[in-house]
Amino acid sequence: MEKIVNQSMLRLVEGDITQETTDAIVNAANSGLMGGGGVDGAIHRAGGPKILEECKKIHAQMGQLPAGQAVITTAGNMKARFVIHTVGPIWHNGDRNEPEILASCYRESLKIAIENRCQSISFPSISTGAYGYPINLAAPVAVNTVINFLTGVYCHIPLLVRFVLFSSSVFDAYAEAVRANAIVQE
Ligand code: ADP
Image 1 (tube, rainbow, N blue to C red):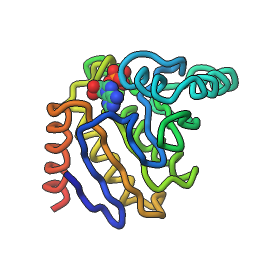
Image 2: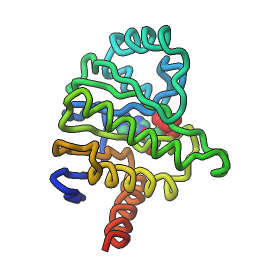
Image 3: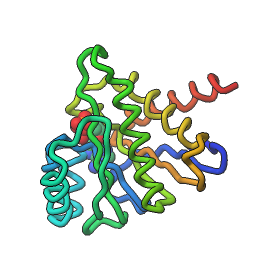
Image 4: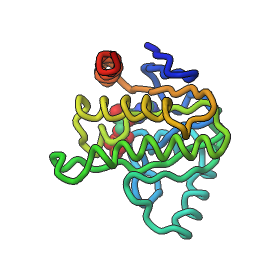
């Protein structure tokens, strides 16, 4: 499924983000930047130890990465050039600014991609695994934030943004959010 936004393209695919050939892939990391389970573990396994070395250096300089922020490393053995590590919100019934923090993950990742001259970027479904964010609530935040970014002033070059979704049910939730966004825009 795809949608043209300004001169940029938003595409949804079902797949494994470690296989992406975009300039950057985004990791749903944790604040310690030490790797973990889910997509984080898959990215570190596929990319090799170089990514963790860089993460350790960043952590030594900056300490814990707060939720909603993003940092960048190389992508080790993967085809992408960069991994952008962002920390999603842990779901607490929506009482702790989870939508704002989740939106910030997508915006900050897109900004750091543009600062590093990326023309394409792939996102997983941040926070909807171990962090427990309900998929039907997370998908519209993800999709609407990316579409708003692509229409905003910060996005001065055409970008390809791919959501790489690990199962058909996650894909369906994102597809529904893209359809709903078109209705909102009309
Ligand atoms: P979080 O801690 O932010 O919730 P998880 O890694 O637990 O992150 O889950 C986020 C999403 O990433 C889930 O939908 C999960 O199914 C998905 N995921 C896991 N492995 C991969 C992968 N290799 N490629 C793309 N998505 C993945």
